[in-house]
Image (cartoon, rainbow, N blue to C red):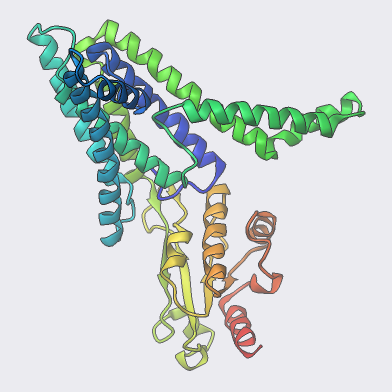
Length: 388
């Protein structure tokens, strides 16, 4: 569920729907408990600026401390996400975005127990600002993490930009519809409805609407939960995040391994020794997990960043299903290789895989000759590229 990267529209929409409600839920709980918003810093920054402007007025010092602390907590949360992700990358963890989500779970758990204790002691409605700061830090963590996963497309903790972009995209959809259906009959307009599934502005509008709707749903659920189980209201998003992490670990991920010409059994069967593989050519193979179960494709973009040779041969088994997310990830990896002057050659491609690859956006720059049926043809193609 918590992917290494969200390349496809489907994955980005899943992230938006799955996690935006957590932010709306957590934000409304903080608003009820302490009259503070923690999922976005616009209001707190405004209050901070007003307090700084009237620093000599009664209560200004408390307002400066409160608003400044929440902004700082959100900022520290975002920085913590960056540190956790970088550490996971250095240790080559497969699920590099799980550590910051686990840290968010810890923060929200402490935040939840603190609020439950505050209610149990019969304290006033306004919870301590230090306790609310834990929620703000958790929101900074989540926003920074999902921003990295989605490539700065999905923001899950605030909807100001979402509403702005939604308005612009709706106008773009209306303009597209008017131009495409102008002077055409109802049959043409019905066909446009079917084609709208692939229109960029329509997809973008749907994604933004999902983010806004999910955030709003979280606010509603949080309010209802507070009325029913005030001391344990935060247990719901915490359990959901734990489920998301569990799904991430239970979903097996394929991996890409370097093929050693000296020891590879398939190359030996083909009679290809190490002397037939030039030094400027690297061979890789996509492997499915050994255990049975649901599995997802490897992160091709991350793999591409680690390659160094001029010619990169990637063997993809004919039984591997190239779905939307896998093709989007593969497109990103191919683009990375080509941007550095490297030449990719895909091997082991079946007829079905060939059709899906050729139809995928971002892979159209590949020559049909770079899509080969087996390793022998791929190595021959690599020799031809080096000679030319």
